Length: 150
Image (cartoon, rainbow, N blue to C red; front, side, top):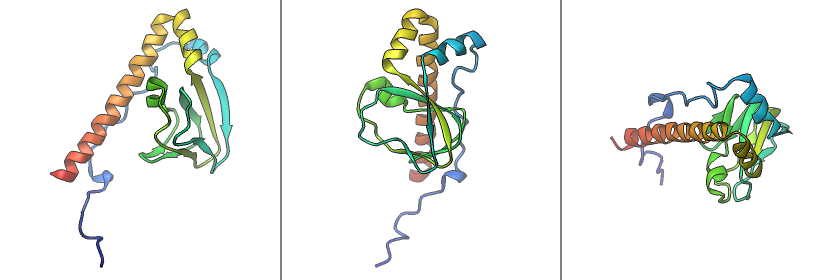
């Protein structure tokens, strides 16, 4: 039995989506230099898993070069990912894979706490921007669901 016609969902290209807010766009070079002091650079080859579903890694990631694929779609520079596990400490919900060679910055939770102790305003800015990015993604997902259900 062909079930392909049972559910007709519109493609995401048909739905309006906003660009997510940028990460720390309003911060100066000094703030970025301090943030970078607290990150580590990781390099990935095309096809490598960057994050693996189920792993415990309470870190925030920033893609600075290359392309990644997440279940929600492509990830392009300069984008954050891994925000939820960074915030709640639970295992990763999805696998993210490099679709090209990629350079990623990793901000571990302990490093974030050290950064926040040194510069509380910058720590707040990181959390505020992560919240804005997640809220934009949630709104886009809600809009897509509303489009499916009419």
